[in-house]
Image 1: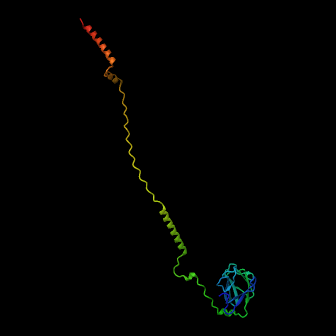
Image 2: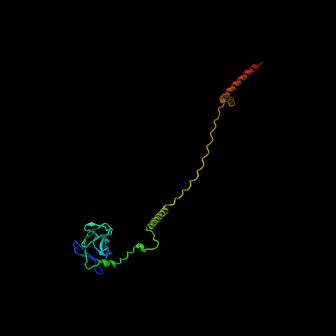
Image 3: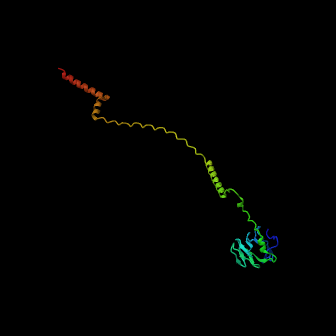
Length: 229
């Protein structure tokens, strides 16, 4: 548990500035994680500190500090550390985690070398991905199937909601047009001689008949006179 040493701290971090000046953060074991997260061994409750900000460990007879890729960085005596590069940390050195300035102090009666020999690092936390076994259905595939199903449902709905076209009745057959009347054949004009001959066949008018009778009577008288002795 963070900030709870089992057999006395191996070292301490003292707040070097601010309203919490002098407050101590003990280092309970030879390998600790410093940060703001609940799982940190050295807990620094400040918004400028990352959940897992840095790691402090006793290695090869000296303390070494390593920045764990924090957001606001780690600086030793004003020099910013490169991420994931162990840097020696002597006692009395000023360290800045984010915006929190601390001083690394030694504990006289502590024996970090002996603690390191008997130290067994805790097993790394099991990730959720490692706990799951068997086949995992990809999330992106599930989303794709849902989208395809929605598109198919929309297409079916569009098809159902459209009215079925009704075929118009076929138009009635038109009555056949009447046949055209035969054209009149023009009559050829009669010859003049024919008209004269035909006029003799026509009955004379009443006046003409009387004249004819008179002429006949005269002709008859003349004939009788010639024949008398």
